Image (cartoon, rainbow, N blue to C red; front, side, top):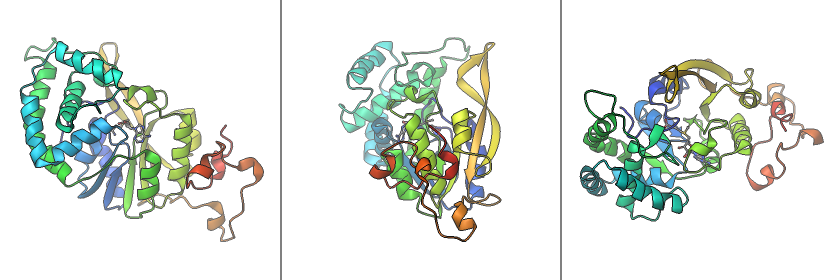
Length: 320
Ligand SMILES: C[S@@+](CC[C@H](N)C(=O)[O-])C[C@H]1O[C@@H](n2cnc3c(N)ncnc32)[C@H](O)[C@@H]1O
């Protein structure tokens, strides 16, 4: 299924390959912790599934679709909204004033504004991209065609979300809630290092990347995670504990020599078939757990006191 909205960092082009890794873990429930456009969830074929994102606008869009009555109202609203820079700019003005959110609108209006903004924003950059349509195609204006075609699929996507648990949690809560469950696989597609500011919530920071790696390292659920190769990520997810796969992905938002750029995506896997589960060293050796020496305490002071966070794996303790 094609995803509902164009989305920066969206994984629809590699969703099928990711789905193979998700199923290979043997888990029967998929938890998409950083769900975004839900491209992976929609294409992974899991019957039991959880969508989560911190963006209230996206959560509102999917909840509205999941409700058959609201879905009809949304469809009517979107069908009669013409492609227009003025409409886009009016929405933008209040969206920016309201700190990158449509939360000031009633439910159906909010879902409609979110859908409209994602379809017409430049390069999928919904946080601050301006109105964009491309006139290069002889067959028609690509963005308008895509908008109209997507409206025809609202009903099937809505049915899909009627059977999906929709969460609106910060990742820490989501991972600590579902990471306990051995029948779950967590799909982790966070804002990549250096792209945190592209999303409506732009507060994901270095400390979050580190905290997330701590949580994932120790949770019983299987994990499939995507990132670009980066020194921080290599330190947080060492190859002796995580299985690294690499795949080439075409980027919609980046161009090289006039062509869409190709990037190497890293898929990091923990748990499941053919992969070592992360077992703390003391458990592997059958001797009692040792308290961390003072020098290998939490890498960020205060993190472990405010959250139920697993002890820092030893390989992480050198990160500053
Ligand atoms: C790379 S995008 C995910 C793209 C998604 N996999 C797709 O295919 O469309 C990262 C997502 O993480 C969400 N996000 C950012 N910070 C978050 C947080 N602290 N907790 C939960 N979600 C967060 C953003 O709103 C964004 O939708």
